[in-house]
Length: 215
Image 1 (cartoon, rainbow, N blue to C red):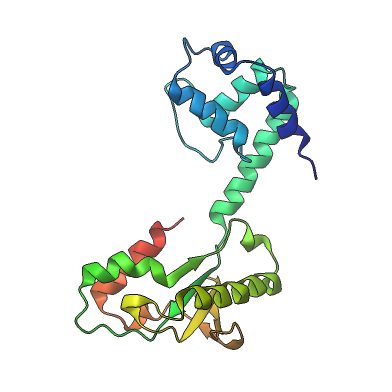
Image 2 (tube, rainbow, N blue to C red):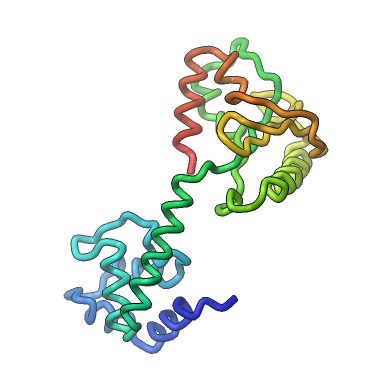
């Protein structure tokens, strides 16, 4: 499906010199920063509305409105698009993002906590943006494919964490399917990832902080 709004905006912008666009938007002169911002907005499916950047002249919404005004876009359509994109971004932010947790049956011995914290991200596999919108069956299919690819890429060895035993596909908070290394479903689980339950208290705190910081 062709996105007529985006296509129209890109074509209109391409017919003008970038410096002229920025001047029409009220910038005294074009700089590398506002030229880059202009290009990023034109390239982005969200038109930069997912960027909280501010250049002392325009917010993300203000920048898009000014750009559409200068390029002659119909403002009623511009406002409709802004509303739609903001709604989609809000849904994306509030939705539970499914992920895979790699289980190696790890039990800490002499490994430094710092080293474990640095490598903690290796145990989490994130899906592309928007996968949460798929049905559970479709999400599970994606998870099974990702498991098989990960096993192939790693040789089922996760370095400091050890040999991979299975994967936990979290499709909602504290609810997961257990997947074998070939992607087969072998069980279900309720509760957080095991290291937050049985690991050391310090590692559990580091793990939780690391997970929350991930996009």
